[in-house]
Amino acid sequence: MRDTARPCAGHLPQLLRPVCPLAILRPAFGPVGVSAHPTHWPATKEPESANTVNAVIEPTIEVYLSPGDLRRALESDVRSGFTTAPKSLPPVYFYDDRGSRLFDAITRLPEYYPTRCERSILDAHAKDVVTSTDTDVLVELGAGTCEKSRVLLDAMLSNGSLREFVPLDVSDSTLWQAANALARDYPGLAVHAVVGDFHQHLDRLPAGGKRLIAFLGGTIGNLDPEQRRDFYGRLVSVMSADDRLLLGTDMIKDRERLVRAYDDDQGVTAEFNRNVLHVLNRELGADFDPSRFEHVARWNEADSRIEMWLRSSVEQAVHVADLDLNLSFEAGEEMRTEISTKFSAVGLEEELAEGGFTVESMWASPGEDFVLTSARPR
Ligand code: SAH
Ligand code: AVI
Image (spheres, rainbow, N blue to C red):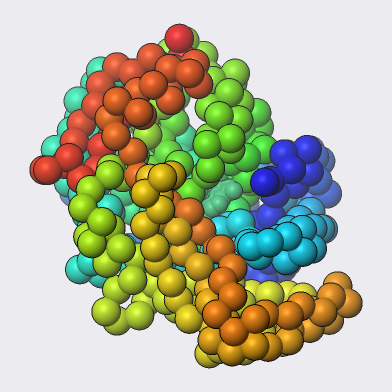
């Protein structure tokens, strides 16, 4: 279980060095608000709806996870996760640059339906979401490449209410590239990126305006029930009565489809899963041989979740040099790398109510494969 009193880790390799000359990594809990000088990312296609009259506002970035925080969190998670049975690691370590690219590839796989389903709901209902809340600030937690944010930003632009976008993610380079692309594509939009952890930095989100706090992709399902309770509690405590939560959740469905979404034919998800071993080798001087670990995706009926595991194909010893830690794996021994919880509409509504929210609307994709929920603090 994550210790919420200490920094939770993001991926380390890219976070240990600045993502751009001006994205200053400050000591933990230090002052915030670093403005970036102009940077020149390749311009992406300007959406037709972009307001070309306004000037581009250079994005700003706040960094709440210093390299030291991240390093300490990784060390602590490895020590605790590898010395309890079964071995486990939090999924946050998947997302170094390579992991973020692999996740992006996953979202385009034929078997991985959640991204397409959520996108289709946004395409159909972003306008309803925005007009019903009259929001002028979009906050996105675990924003990644911010691809789906564009649908909401376009709707806010059409509604005449678009003012500020605040994406938060642990993956600093992915976030910074996305922030720059969005600032260029939406002239007049203030993009304020936050490198932080949604388990511990929700209270650092800029206040003011009517905020739509989006948590998309089904990432809430990567938290266990206790982490979700903590998350809702912290989120509701920083929301004003005018703010709204927009939550994307993957729903319970036929087991075969679920497992296939996490065990694709091309092996992209397997590579994503094994990526955590490359991260440990690079960051902690471990000597994992990723080819000696098999990707396993399994449906856990009792807990309504897909679990990803890495199964040692042989009996083997692994040394984590930086921690002076010797690990042994039995042949067939598994370590858990991710849970991905699937929800029922009733269960979700109950969970949100217990977390201090009142559900206002739910929009489902065809077949109720995926659901977007808008909720307000009670
Ligand atoms: N929202 C996007 C990306 C989902 S992938 C989408 O729907 O497609 C999950 C994202 O959450 C990654 O970008 C990862 O870096 C980020 N993430 C994972 N754990 C996090 C944490 N504890 N705090 C902040 N971001 C986190
Ligand atoms: C980010 N998260 C919602 C994804 C999921 O479906 O749980 C991560 C993922 N893991 C394997 N494939 C995708």
